[in-house]
Image 1: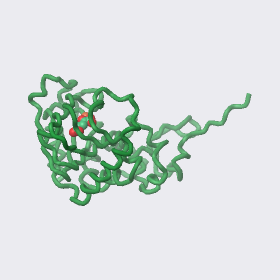
Image 2 (image 1 turned 30 degrees about the vertical axis):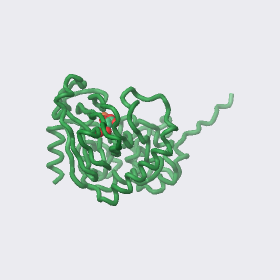
Image 3 (image 1 turned 135 degrees about the horizontal axis):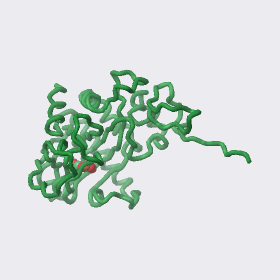
Image 4 (image 1 turned 45 degrees about the vertical axis):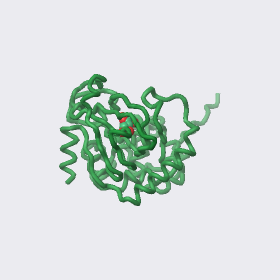
Length: 277
Ligand SMILES: O=C(O)CCC(=O)C(=O)O
Ligand SMILES: [Fe+2]
């Protein structure tokens, strides 16, 4: 089955996998998203990108509850697709049948105004090699009325930044609670405006190859109680097996094995001893 989704992502740049999550998981996800959004919405820096100013965002939900990371760890199909596109065959310190890609960012999002077409891969390029994909866990139905995601199929291979003139040809990705939508971060995408008075929450994670700088400094800041719940491989996905060493005495190859994982998150914060002069 995964071949069908992989093929769609390769050719169209995205796919929608129906009903990956149970109604119970969706219900819990929505309750927790609403709870944490209310609790944290006033604590957001004004240093936001122009794209993200108007909409509802729950930033870094994985700093708040382990449930949000687990949403992306549990489905086997998600892991298989991400491994297909993002695993580095030369990352030999991690077993070849386990993920060596990393979490680039994680957020909850609901639409308000139209979101302009954009790419999230920072550079457009034409290649079969992919270095970033996004996965959106749909918690509420997405329709043309409430600000669903829209995409330009095939645009991930255009080798160009998004052309706003193409918005009229964008295809709405209609989805149901429990669906999982995956797109190549090069695809031209955005959202319609939300013309209802309701939310349309989804939890969106970007995963990238291990060498890409993450959006936030997770490896210094993941709460210890969440770190303690992760398997070694899940720690690697959060970034703990690809941290840059502080100097050549500590290590050189950033493709680190599980044997370099530390007990406590605070131990990753390097404390260089002041030199005595
Ligand atoms: O909410 C969506 O469907 C898309 C959001 C998006 O493109 C983004 O946050 O980069
Ligand atoms: Fe995006």
